[in-house]
Image (cartoon, rainbow, N blue to C red):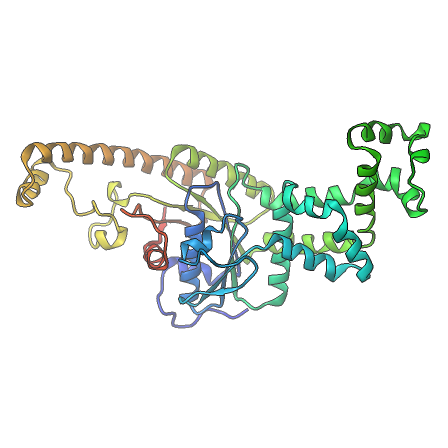
Length: 393
């Protein structure tokens, strides 16, 4: 792994944090700016002189859209002008390469691929995207082309599904039910209606009422074809799990200032730590610094990127500035009332964020970005976001 430059292009707390890690995982529900946070961190890491990959598991392709490359194809590494690459997960392509690479023969690969459950898994089975993401992440880390990989996980109401889904998929494929009830007969080529209707196959008979024997046999054949491959699947998943638990990995729980999202973030960090993953801190988007009582006294406008930062809450000062701008007094009064309401809400948010940080205790690195007046949907906007990342707490 290549270290950061001794004299980076720009020095920042976020850059210093990224120099201590080679794998960063951004977790959180949809709509909190997780993809933007991933891309912004990638920009910061690249400016520190690190070969950086932003890897998104989100099937919605938000990362490519965020840097203005909405036409980009999954599975293709895309160089970005700021010195980092992005890669969107190609579920079908990765799954096919994994099966082909680890099948013992071309015939085994073709039999697996021709089975109807092959496509069903990739299109319908819950957690399969996450399982394939783990396989792809193993491939990326093994190749060692990058100094740091920043992972944008799928939006989910259960934030640890990315970490737990691979085991669920592997448990389905490497199933004791098939080994105990079907394997001896499949091995002898004798899975027929005559055997399946015997007294000791009561469970099979009941299951077949819902699936039909042909469907049941095809499922059994699909799983049977993976004989000898399960150990490799589990070994690779375990290697990735160990990397995810290593101290060189950082987990950021991304949240917005919405109260429900802050509560979810608190629950997620507790689950992460209980599961043994290295929670690094919160990344809170759309946080209004101007409304904090302890806001910086100088350079605040540039610091926060907030269009309201220069305004004074004092009614007389506000009215004087409004008059200087040619704003009628009645409109100025309404604007000042709106500003006062906004500040009151954001100061409440500040208290809620402070309570969230206090739950984690000391020793963590929290970051925040401001609430910009416009949406971020291109590379210049992400650069602005990267510049605005600030430590919190």
